[in-house]
Figure 1: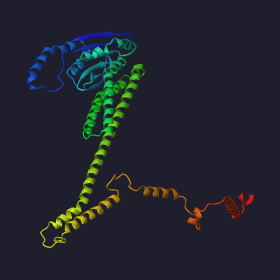
Figure 2: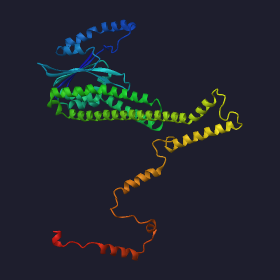
Figure 3: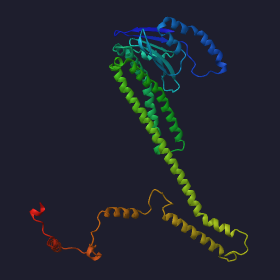
Figure 4: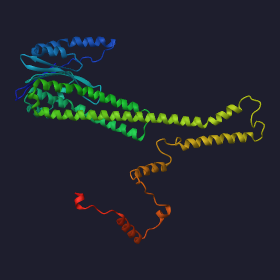
Length: 390
């Protein structure tokens, strides 16, 4: 066991407890059970030494010593007041399996951290962070500074995840393979892993805010952490929406491909139907059949088959079923609909008639135009007087 006690000018202290015993996260195999028992006996006195050295946190040491899952508890003690204690899992490298428990206990002026991985105290006690701890006015504020330092690995993991997600989107756009769905599901599992690591931190933030109120919320470090939490929340939500969009696009493409295959098979079956019918009829064991003894019977039969097949294909082509079903084969139909929609508001008044084709094609001279204008004004009714208009 390695123990360090750090006191700061603002009136709070930090106790670093480095354990030598490493608990087993998964269920061991029977052949390794003897080695694990030997290690447990070797470090059996470590926990009791810690409990004797720090009796004020003995219950926390006993409960957290072998814990390998997330656990956050809010308690009240007569000596220290409000206490937040528990365990969160921290990922320390790019490997998603490289997670280690980080045990903590803190009140308003005292902080205990306990871990088995030496990388955690090396990162937290880096000289670059010494000035940051000196500016903290309380232990909760310093603890959230430590949480921000430990979340740097999560930020790095999200940046690498964004690169893999962008590559997946490029692959789907350029060459949409059948196995892309497996890659999308793998990205989804990675995002769930990051969410499971980040959710306990948000729970810890809410519990600490409930416990210490203005002591924590008024600090500068907490405000910075709030902005960081907001950024991570936005990233996780955005990545989740992107993955849902990719799944929807892959589902739509799969349905379109399935419909396209069924359509091609249906067209092939319909086109081959005349050949099938003629083969079934002329392949039967009847004695008398049309064109059986005729020297040109094969030509007649083959011509009839090709004629009927061509007629069926023409009908399918006419309906637009042989090409892309999303595109209209005849563009003039869409143009006609567009012209009708444009001309629909311009309804003709009753009693008016369109000019004949000859009059529409006739060129009108400027003198005729002026006469038509004068005639139109002459036929108009006079305007009402000022009194009637009022």
